[in-house]
Length: 304
Image 1: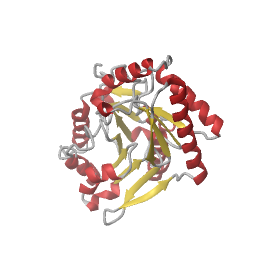
Image 2: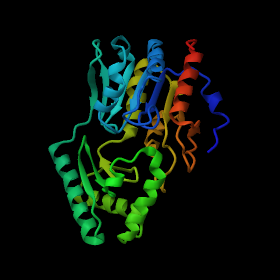
Image 3: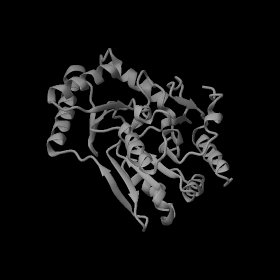
Image 4: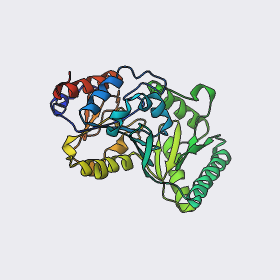
């Protein structure tokens, strides 16, 4: 899609908090170098701009790839909202991560999530002959891999279109007439049956369900970080790459668009083949667009 004609105007101000999705926004993937963004983000931190990573993965991935490389003295301005809204980390004076917020599942909640997973796995096999794999090793959440094949073991975001075609074909072949939505409907019904309220999302490959999501990360940023600093919503910038719908489902970053952050600026640097929600400005250019936006901020702060 074409770049929003007003995006540069909306970005033409100094933001005191810059928050962003990690994979596909700041870096192409979890193995990509950070040589281009490290000095830029450090320069913003040196100006007392708060930098917040928002990611569904655990702290270990962005910490190894990026946070551990940031100069310890600057880390007072660095935060990581991880595990899909379940945890927030800051850093101490030595630059070591410190958990500042956490939502830990109880033994009962974990047992109920496991029950949902096992009973759905058995149901999909019995009803459709569809094999799905349970992903247990996620904090406060579980996943059902609906295409657990070698070819699609770890698909990059750039192949999301191909993945969607492959998943749709697989479900048709197994008689799932309603596609992914039919599986989500069964997941919602199973949660009610088991008696647990879970947030449900999909990245096309997985059905993911847990106790929190990226909306919780945004609420912490606004209610705790911004309010604690006296920062208005208008001085907060959120960036992502999947705000718009994919395959009829909200993009993975759409959960960041929260009413509590009304007035903040939302920008997508992704491909967004189906457009973006009204609340989001489109910039594009992928990780290069992310770097351009950082450079724009540095210019406004007089550091370019």
